[in-house]
Picture 1 (cartoon, rainbow, N blue to C red):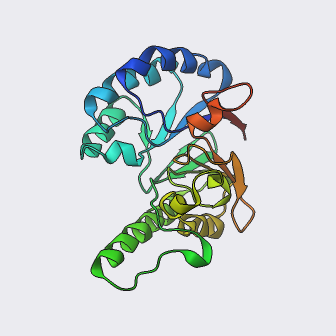
Picture 2 (cartoon, rainbow, N blue to C red; picture 1 turned 120 degrees about the vertical axis):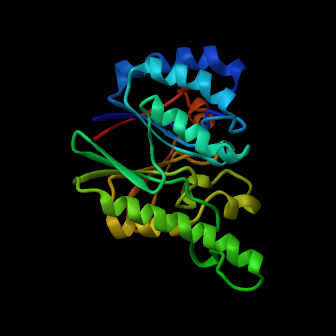
Length: 235
């Protein structure tokens, strides 16, 4: 299976024609399209409607997770419904299997990495914040436990390792993801992990268990030579 992966489209009406042209060739390159969050600019249905026109016209099965931008307007449920009705597989603590390849995904959350990960201690506000991070890790655990395929791909929005966020300001590292997600991946095993969110990070990294992690934020892909809208992975 050839997988085209991208993230952080931040779609708005002015970007319609450019994205239509850029994704118009994905059918010649891939069997499945993965979008690792931040499909919209502000999480509005009026942004999703023309984006669906672009994605559906690729005629490629599409798997997505939501990103923080997709939550901005509090209409994430409506966005999910629109995508599901268009035939897009939206992963939110859920799994999807196609042609012997399993996809497990969730948005993920922030919280930091390794020994400096934020813990549930102190004020109630901190405990609620940490609980949101733990809840996303549990959702990923549930999704991965559903897979029965040998080949498996994890789709996240937030980064599970610090290696793929290098290049971003050090001060915001804890807000770009959390290693709680990587711990789940290492327990269950995967062939690769795809994420976005870190627009100026690094393309590749690995979990502590050695599983390949790829940052497919579109801004990062377009900064390569030659620039690209998506990256192809062959399983």
